[in-house]
Image 1 (cartoon, one colour):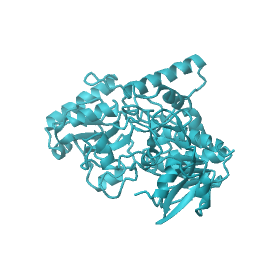
Image 2 (cartoon, rainbow, N blue to C red; image 1 turned 90 degrees about the horizontal axis):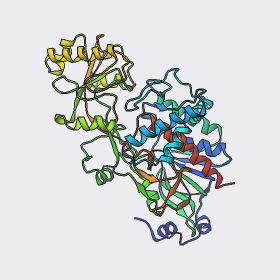
Image 3 (cartoon, rainbow, N blue to C red; image 1 turned 30 degrees about the vertical axis):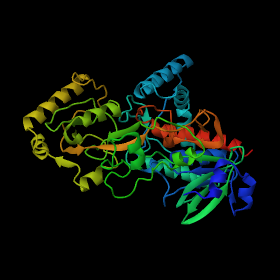
Image 4 (cartoon, helix red, strand yellow; image 1 turned 90 degrees about the vertical axis):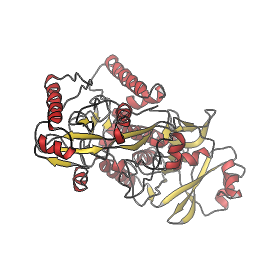
Length: 470
C-alpha cells in the first residue's frame, strides 16, 4: 500500500526538489526500467545521444528479459538499391499486412515508422558488433521471407550480449535485483524520479526522463484473465513453459504508468501460439501440423491467430508437429528430446505407432504434402513457403500445445515513444518501448517484428529521453 507521502508525490502535490532534499537519492540523467532488447537499446541510445549518467534497473538477477529466451528473428525491410517508388510500395505492402493481421487496430503512423526504420536498426546492431547469418528467413507467422538472425540456437542471447557490451562501453550503470515500484513527478506532472527495491532495500533515484521497457503481462495470470478470461492458470507462457521458474513479464511498467494516468490500449489482444511442444523449427516450410488422426488441418505459414484458432477447435487443444532430418532445428531441440517432448522415428510406421495413428493415413498425409512441395502449390490450405519435403528419416514428432506468448496491448504511446494519457496528452519525461506498449500491432502481431519493435522504439525512446537532460 502506498504511504501518504508516496501518494502526494505521485499526484505531484509536493515539488520534486522536496523529494531530492528529503532522500539520499542517486541522480541520473535517464533511467531505463527493464534490460531486454528494448531497455538496453534505450540505454545505449540515450548514452549515444549525450546522456552522461544512464541507469538500467532490472528486477531479476540476470539481464535479458524475454529477449534472451527468444528465437531472435528480426524482420527488416532492406532498401537494397531500390528506387523510392519501389521502396515506398514495399513499405505500403508491409503496412497492409500489419493492419490486416492486426484487424485494423494498429496505429498506421507507428507501423510506418517501424517499417521505415527497420533497416537502420539492423545496421545499428551490426555497428555494435552483431554478426548476422547471410540468408533471410520467413519466420513463423512472418508471412514473407524478410527475417534475419545471428544464430539458429542463440540469437536472443546474442542481442543481449551485444547491447550490454555497448552499454558498458558507454558507461551505463546496471542494477540487478532492482524492482521499480513507484514513479515520482513534479507539481506540473513531469517525471522527477523513481523508487526501486534493490536487493531488498528501498532506494530512490532522480531523473528527468524514464523509459519503461518492462515487457508485457503474460506472466500475470490475474491481469491477463481480466482481459481474456480464457487464459487462466492452466496456460503457461513461452518464457516458462514447463513451470520450472517464473515469467518476469508481470505488467510492472503498465501498473507504474497507470498511476500517472497513462492510457492503455488493446489489452485484450494477447497472443497465444504453439511453441514449446513438438515444434523444433522456428521458420516456415520445414514441418507440418497434424490432427490426432494424422491429417493436416491448417496452413502452417499463416498468422499465429489463425493457427491458434484452429488448434482451439481440436480435442484437448493440441496437435502433432512433424519434421525430419533435413530441417534446421532451433535451440529447444536438445531440451525437448531429453524431456521426451519430441520423439525420433526411423520410419513412417514407427512414427505412426508412436503417435497412435493409422500408418496408412500418416503415409498418405506425407505423400500428399510432399507432392505439394514438389509442385509448389498447397491445394488443401494455401501454404506458399516450402523449404523442403518431409521424407528423410529420422523423423521428429511431438504434441504441440498453446502457450501465452506476447501481449499486443499496453501503454499508449506516440511516434516519439512518449507515454500518453487518456486525453492523448503527453506525460512529460515518460517514455516506453517494446512489449510494455500497445497500439502498434493491434489484434495480433506479424511474426519477426517484435525484436524490430524493441530495437526501433528502444532507440527512439533513448534518444528522446536524452533530450530532457540537455
